[in-house]
Structure formats: structure tokens, C-alpha cells
Amino acid sequence: MELSPSPGPPSGDLTSDMVALAGLPDNSPSVPGLLTRLVRLTAVLVDPVDYVSVTVVRNGGYLTRDASDPAAEATDLAQYAQDDGPCLTALRSGEPVAVPDVADAVVWPGFRDVAWQVGVRASLSIPLFAGSGGTVAALNLYARDATAMRTLTEHVEACFRRTGDPSPPPPLDVGSQRLVLGVRGALRSRDLIQRALGVLMGGHNLSAVEAYRHLVEETPVGTPLTATAAGILRQLQS
Image 1 (cartoon, rainbow, N blue to C red):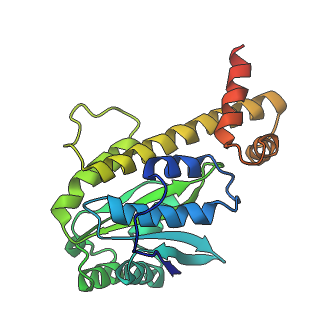
Image 2: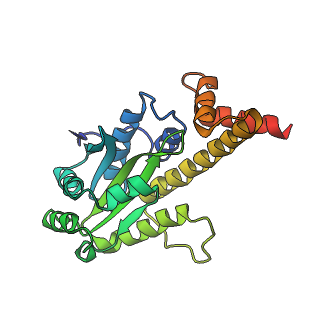
Image 3: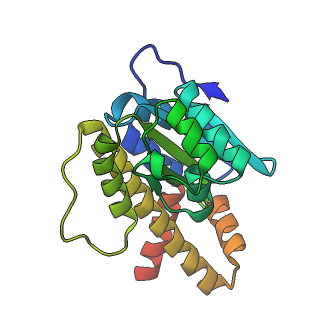
């Protein structure tokens, strides 16, 4: 695990980096660097968040790929020890998992106790995915102020809902807005790629794995899979 360096302004853009990740092949060498950047950008720019980490699957277990503070890593490790917790649930389910009040997390006693000891009072784990659509990591946001975290959680959860919300959540700080825009953009990229994979499966009698491999092979190096996917869908409409 690496601790993200704190001095100096963060490089990159929270929105575009999250969207870029969704358009990369799962095994792209750029994935680890993007995950590290997302940790640093989120920790610096998103006001309600105090500690950030990113969890990945490694050798049949789980690893904190990067963290902004030892408190985040300690909270992650408590979940790995129990083989359960919000970050692992997000990683396994592909859905965001919120803990609005750590004191109430009775189903995850290891997570609850360690989080409370390091000052975490609320958390939100957001699944991150690359080109195949499968979850490649969980971005874990830890906050000392549960009230401040609530609005960000509402916005992120709304991104994953399929139906519109007639009463939108309250406004966000600028950094949280960039994060939520990134989540929305990544979901749109995933939907675009999945539609193209469906076309390949139906038109060429391919399995899902074969269609994804074909999409990757047809995408030039350095070009996002979304560009190739959009071209496939344009051909279908012409």
C-alpha cells in the first residue's frame, strides 16, 4: 500500500479521471495510476471527506492499493480481517455502500470499532469499474463529520438509481460536484460499452467474454473503449 503524497496541488481532474477509468481495458497499465490519482484528488478536493483509500482484489484477497492517511488503511484492514464491511460489499455488489453513522454498523463490528477509534463517523464506498463493466476497485470515503457526509452520499446513491428522483438532494461543494459528475459519466460510459457488447454478441454470435475481447482488440492503443463502442453503435444506426 502507498500513502498518497500530500504536498503540492493535486494533478488531474476528478471527473475526467473517473470517466477515463471506465473506458480503459481492465488490464490496462494505466489503471493503477488512475486509482492513485483518484485517492489523492478526492482527499484534497471533496470537502466532507477526511480520509480516502481504494480497495482492490489481489491474489484471492483484498489490498488497499493506496490511501491518503493511515486511518483509512486501518479502517480497510479491519474489514479485510472480518472478510466483510462496506468497502468489500461495494466491491462485490457493484453498488455504493454508505454507513451514515458508524456507531450503528453492528453487522460489521471490526469495521465499527476501528473506524470509531480513528475518528471516522461515516463512510461511503463507491464501486469503480473499467471497460468490461466489472468492478475493479472500491473508492472508500471516510468522514469525521457524519452530517456533512450525508448530502454527498445522497447524490452518489442517486447516480446509481435507474429512476429519477423528484426531490433532488441539496447542493454540493465544488469538489463533491466533480466527484458526482465523474460517477455519472463513468456510468454513462459503462452503459455505452455494454450496449456495444450486446450488438457484438448478437451480430457475431459471440459470448460476453469474446465480445469484450473483440472490442479491446479493435480499439487502438491510447484510445478509450468508448470511442470504439460509439462507432459500433453508429454503424448499427446507419
